[in-house]
Length: 95
Image (cartoon, rainbow, N blue to C red; front, side, top):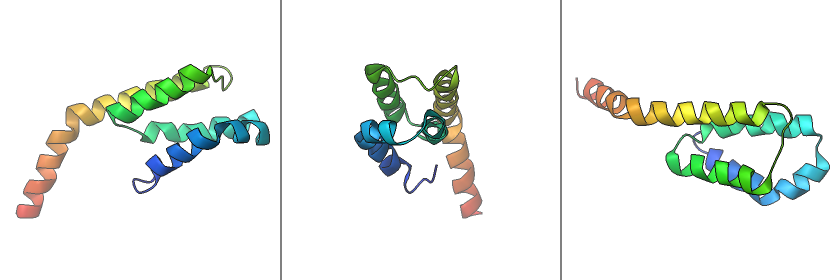
């Protein structure tokens, strides 16, 4: 979830998924995939959805659906409130 490494971590996960799927139990993969919620840009959300859909990945139960819903909410919030938050922070720095 770190702003400095989340995209690198996502690239690593995508690149090494098959190996990790063989190496780790499903519970470990489930917990690791919780980090996708931090990929809150429209482009990354699309990439995440395409990755999981194209590979037909099942994390068990509704886990993946819930992560994708949380990601959708995070992207929507960022799009809706991002400009206001940015403007507020800029004006507070100028004060």
